[in-house]
Each structure stands twice: as C-alpha cells, then as structure tokens.
Image 1 (tube, helix red, strand yellow):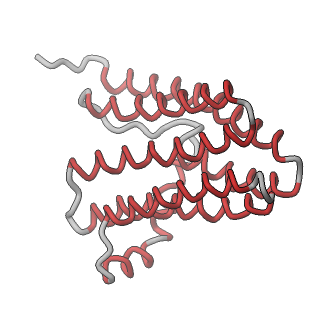
Image 2 (cartoon, rainbow, N blue to C red):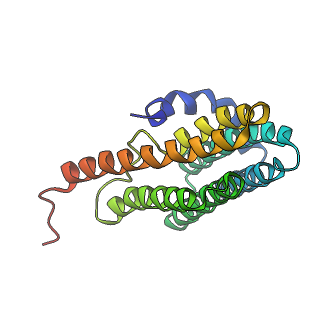
Length: 203
C-alpha cells in the first residue's frame, strides 16, 4: 500500500551512500536535520514561485532529497547501534515540521486557505495515528496510500507541472489529493491497528 511497500528496495539502493556517510562521520540526527532543511527549502521555493514560476522546479529535487535523508537517518541509526528513543522523538517531530512547512507554503500559494487547513490537519492526524499505535504497545504504522513518501513523490511531479502551466489549479489539486488520500490512509491505519491491538491487555 503506497510507496512504503517499496521502501526495502529504496533502502537497498542507498547502501553505498550510507557507507560513505558513516565513513564521513555523519550521524542520524544530522541527516534528520538535513531532511528538515530540505523540506523548509521546498516550502520557500514554492512561495518564490509567486515571483517566478520556474522556482517551482527546484521543489522536486528538494523533496526527493528529503526522502533520501529520512531513509538514511533510520538506516544509520540502526546499523551503527545509535538508535535511541530520543532520536525517534526528534525524527517524528522534525517530520511534522517539514510536512507543515511544505503544506502551509502550498496553501498560501494556492489561496485555498480552508482546503489547506483541512489538509494540514488530516496529514497531522494521519501521522499521529501512526505514532500513537506504537505508544499503545503496537508497531509504528506506516501503511496507507498517502504516507510521507507518497506526498513527496506526488509533489515532485506536481511542482514542475505547476511551473509550466497555471499553478493554482495544480496546487489546489495537490491539496485535495493529499486530503482525500489522508482520509483513506487513516482508515487503513485504523484497521491495521485494530487487528494488531485487539485483545491486547495491560493487565
């Protein structure tokens, strides 16, 4: 379901990059920060698209670099034995900051404030549902048609399109697609959580 299904192959393709990063002394937290910077930069270029639509082209490599950094931070944390609860909190919070920055920027550019507010809320709720499952004793849920990787992949395609066509319909369409996909993803995660945690008792 969604791009999370291809994550193992994506991680395998990054093994060479991971080894070079480890050799260079780059840690998981640094990559988490780099991914957040990429997301913030993507939000900035979306806003700059109001001055010159060609700025939108830069959003595609930035969001893809965000995905690379987000994959590498987890890989390095696990493979170097540096994974820790605080790092997980840092990673989750940084992801929400990056998501919000990008979606707020698209909302401002699209002029669809209500749709943007609904989309941001749904994305944050979807992520929260995934994390609260782990807090309740289950696994962190990533299933669904509109996870972070899916949102970034769609944006990587939509942003260059918006650079060469009327941008507003593309950006509004992106928000609507993410909103609908987030609702479906919440349903998928809720079903997965129910299956995993039904019958689990704290006694």
